[in-house]
Length: 182
Image (tube, rainbow, N blue to C red; front, side):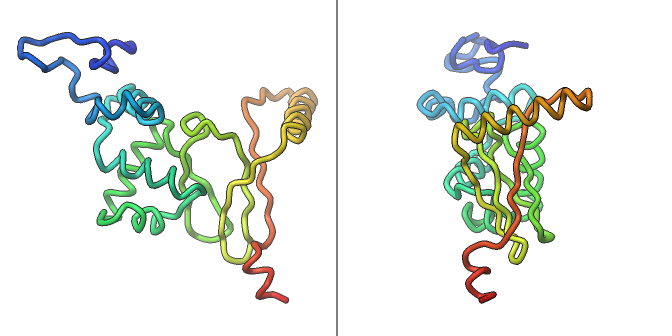
């Protein structure tokens, strides 16, 4: 199955009904997808897993993008509006399986979720508060990224390990927790 099957609105294949295509299930809102590359990418990833890009999933993707940092399920539901927690988890599982969403662990019992770097196009690391569990995105300089990549190559060479990617977590206290501690 290739892009022609994943995105029928780009490659129409009438199935006998005017305006209908064999793979209409692949994309819920094709008109808006053409205007927004992130939604187009998400729809493609979901179609590869034979999943639809429903309004709920689109709303969750938009909420994760607008929150701008890894969000707990509670924060995500608050941003989306009325959404049962079981539905939110089910959709996050589907989005995760498709490589759209990535789970990020903090120092507390709450998992957090963010758009995968391949979807957002934003390479970053995380700063994690050891007091309240807050996780924020931390973008590093090009110089630091080069140093991290070189370090990863050295570790790989020393240990016979093939490094595909790297992630850096800074653990400490956020500004709010640091203020209350003094």
